[in-house]
Image (cartoon, rainbow, N blue to C red):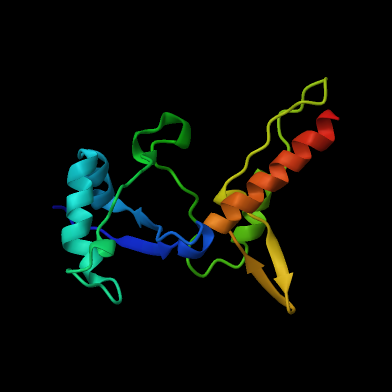
Amino acid sequence: MPEGRMTFHSLARTHDPRPVFAIFVATKLGAYLVSQPKEKVKDILQTFYVPSLPNYDAQNPAHRILDIDSSSWSRDEFSGFGSYTYVPAGSDSGDVNMEILSEKILSSGDGGGLWFAGEHTADTEILEGEHYTTMATVAGAYKSGERAAKLVLRDLS
């Protein structure tokens, strides 16, 4: 199996509280996993990754993966075949440079146009006097989708 990195995120408190967790996979490991059948991926996760989670008990049937679902950005032409926004470490203006992506582009005469949403267009907020960005986060993707939807509704109503 190729090397790569996985990031686990518990979603248990957001799903009724069923035990749900999200796994973000990148690099060659991600490409390998999306090329495998669902049952094989489930077996790989159960064998090699789930046992390293806190409080794992191999004898507890509740600690078995019931089902998996996945997306495959690396195979999706509309996501740029896995593209993402990159701001170099140490950049002090990355959020400003990306701000243009959150603005309406390609206006049409009838009020329509094109808006982008996604983690790369997330706004910078000021919390307790500090700049805070949700860029490159799931929260940023969600919040930017809400923002874009509100802008579409505003311009078309």
